[in-house]
Image (tube, rainbow, N blue to C red):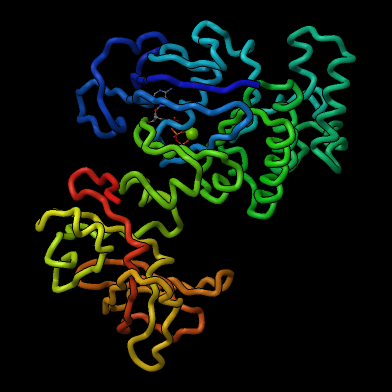
Length: 402
Ligand SMILES: Nc1ncnc2c1ncn2[C@@H]1O[C@H](COP(=O)(O)OP(=O)(O)OP(=O)(O)O)[C@@H](O)[C@H]1O
Ligand SMILES: [Mg+2]
């Protein structure tokens, strides 16, 4: 086991280059498709990444497709040479340590089990590679099977081609733990599974991570998974780490509009071009927002802001008929009321709410209403925001203000 630390790690790909040709070529930020024809096409897959995972903890890595998540894992595993910066396992610089000596347990999306071996052969392969005695392999497989739980032993007799996706997944996970790794690297390991199997396997992985307290990176597109498994979460964009911290912190205090808009399903509403005015914030078209007084005091009149509010903090009621006030106004912070027109209604019976997409003064927002509220497309609604739930970002940079 080990803590993992990356210091100023950058990795660039030349789209047509062979390994070893990457150094010293001018950089281009963003995806290759941004480059116009004729320009050398380069992708900065990792851009000065600083990241530390303490011993025994799990770092969930989130970010849009192509932002560098897999590259990050591959650098940690030693599968990418030719990067800049430093990678440490504990205090050991891993620059010259080949992958097979890193004792990394990897589970990738395409599990790449060895098709010719049965489950048992897949598990013992590592020991044969390292010329370990059979008894050691047997003992480790026995312990691993115990960890993997009911029904796992039966899988050991079968070849991958005869196993379901979920069963292959379990063998792949077992193959990663059997070698007693110092570090676990998961790259979207559950994305091929159906929802039920996914949450079951998630529980299994969580148990495993806790039981062995193995330092782990866990890449996922699924925020529920990140929240369930990560002690820490890192949000990436275009090769950079935008924010790292416990999930609650990243969610409650997003460092910028990107993180704010990335986390949450549906994501946070972001209202652009809001200006500091006299005692209120001016959102254009006669709409105003009432922020906490302390924020107003810190702004100069005319400052431009982006205001964020999560859909679950926008309480929508029908303007006609019953005026059901939702949620208690049990804090002294000021509230804002906007009128709007409903664009779409999405019921969510699980949470007993309906998501209301609406338009208000040129802003498009999502809020929620009680499942029983009668609200239909095209109707007028009233939305309430409480000052305490608003997030504020600088208009230019998108950085969090308060
Ligand atoms: N071998 C390669 N050669 C050239 N470019 C590459 C190579 N591997 C990755 N890239 C580029 O580097 C960037 C980061 O890729 P990476 O696979 O790390 O993204 P990702 O975050 O894992 O995406 P996804 O969520 O789709 O798996 C992308 O723009 C990708 O096209
Ligand atoms: Mg990937």
